[in-house]
Length: 272
Image 1 (cartoon, rainbow, N blue to C red):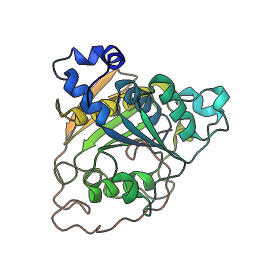
Image 2: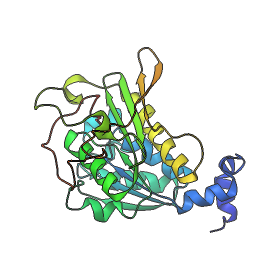
Image 3: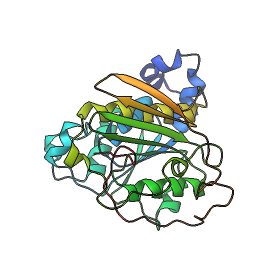
Image 4: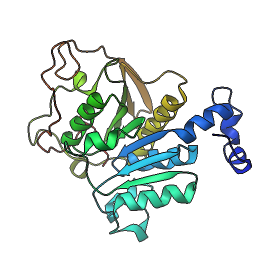
């Protein structure tokens, strides 16, 4: 793939970076990223990946846009209320960059469709809002050998980690299983600062771009925790769990299945 004159101008600020250059931009244009969830985390990730010129972006969400989403889900606008989120986000991406091939999935990720969908992508961004989906994405990416970014937000706090299956700490190394029903609040119950979603979703997009480029240090084997009130970041090193039920020495999870649907909290992640 070679860049045309319009692309050279569009991506000029990337191209002058020694870590990217023309060859790196060509890698991005050939890259494929899947975003599961077109909400608070998925929206900023989608817009920045499109702007960066990631050539193929899958956007997956089975929900419709409603008014309460607009406080943080920046790919959607008031005229989009009632429209499928995946279509709304896809239109926003194409409006930014028509270089991008956007694949729309107006459905939720399931144990039945995960393998067929994930096989076409290089990197997965988890922007979902429930424990069932988060554990499913972790398991599906493990079995498919796909790198992914987890993030979660609640109130003023966010967290994120990047996982390279079979090589780094996975989601289940940290969170072995979902919490009991009703043990934690949802964002609709506890609230969430709108811009928090932008901070964490943009970090997820950064990780996807770095992974496709093959440059820099990924956020692996450490959980990045952000508090907006204190404007503080801290990084906690986390070793792989030898007894992890997914990636441990003697895994008990050998096939995809869906956990019981649960609400989310910071520890499980949220795209609310």
